[in-house]
Image (cartoon, rainbow, N blue to C red; front, top):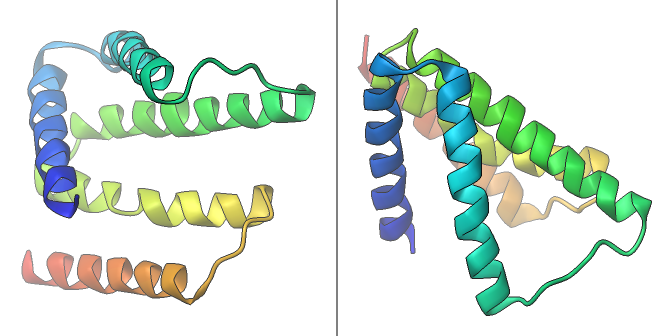
Length: 135
């Protein structure tokens, strides 16, 4: 799974980096949101079935995840892809699991166990050494 994740992540970086040279952030975000929504809809219908949020709290959480994760997070990432090199932007993107864990902890009252804390530390140490070697 980790290898597949790295492979998909590399393809994602390559595609976004090449598109960023020709298109603006809003154009990329618009088509990325439509494309990913359609793919996720098909996968959700195949594996999970169709569900509707039970109440406004669940709907609000879904909207918060959509707004923060996709619109703000990916929009900002697409914007910086045009401003910094690929190495720096990929290092910045490695912080997304840390941010997701912290948002889950503070907003959704999820627990951070020892494995999650160790994972956060490993990511931070890896980014430190990767950035240190690039100087």
